Length: 207
Image (cartoon, rainbow, N blue to C red; front, side):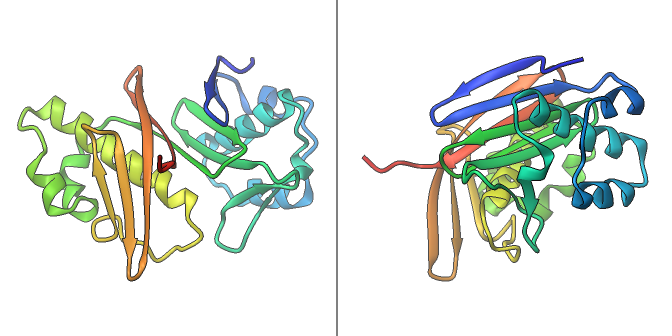
C-alpha cells in the first residue's frame, strides 16, 4: 500500500494512488475528522468509499492531517495551510495535487459511452475537430471532458456550462473559461495512464 507515483509540477506535486486494497486496509492509521466521517458515511458504494479513504491515505503519507482539509458550501476542498489542493478519483485510481497556486486535476476512464454524451459538454468547434475513428474519438472526448472537470474544480462558480462557458484546444493544450464579463485563460498537461486520461490544469501565466 502506498503512493505509486509522484509527479513534480511547476508549483507543486501530483500524487497518484492505485486502489487495490480492501476498505479495512485503507482505513489503517487514519484519524478522520467528524466532517470526513460524516462524508464517508453518506457514500453508499464501496468503490466510492475506497476512493475517499485512498485520498486520506495520500494526505496521511505526505504529512497532512485529515483535520487540515475542509470543504466550502460548494464542495471545493481547501487546506488550512493556504496551499491549494485538488482531488480526483476514477475506479482504480485516486489523485491528489498540492500546489502553491490554484490547480485543477482530473482522471477519467476512457469509455465508449462518452460519444453519446459529447453534445452535452462540447461546443461546436470541439465537435467539428473530433476524430472520426472510434478509439481516437473516445480518447479526444475524454480529454476534453477531463480538462473541463479540472477547470470546474478551479472555479468558485458552480453555474458554469461545460458546453457554453468552456473551450479546450487539445492541440495547444490550452483552455478558456468565459462567462458574461469573466474570462480566464488556462494551460494544461495531459497523459495516459493505462486506459485513463489524466489532466492537470493551471492558470496561464502571461509573458
